[in-house]
Length: 131
Image 1 (cartoon, rainbow, N blue to C red):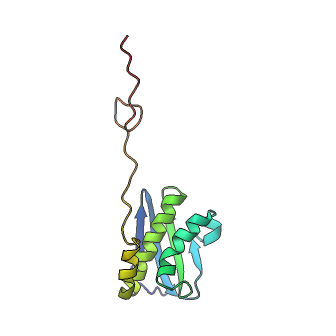
Image 2: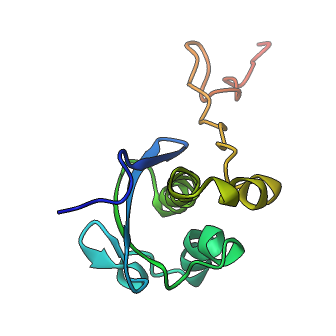
Image 3: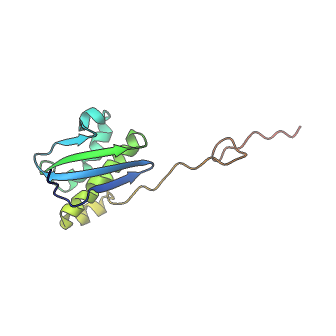
């Protein structure tokens, strides 16, 4: 298997991690062995994944193989978008300004806050009883 990029574009969001492999081709996208619309059933997630390709006008230029793990579907879609953007920059440096201007190269670093001891949730406290 000849891969065009030397290392995969790695995308992350919340606890999801996606590895994206670009090869010159016709534009097929597979996620964990399934076609894109079969894996991401929600149309917003499919749109989110295809955004970097639309910005760089390369929808039909590459076959994309993606392995994604962790998190939920929204986090995985964000991680895949980040990974595709990074792989496109690794493939062709001229894609960098357009992808950066649209915010696709910025990792969304928001994470779930951990639960603290002595509290019900991360910030919610147990109900105070004076008597």
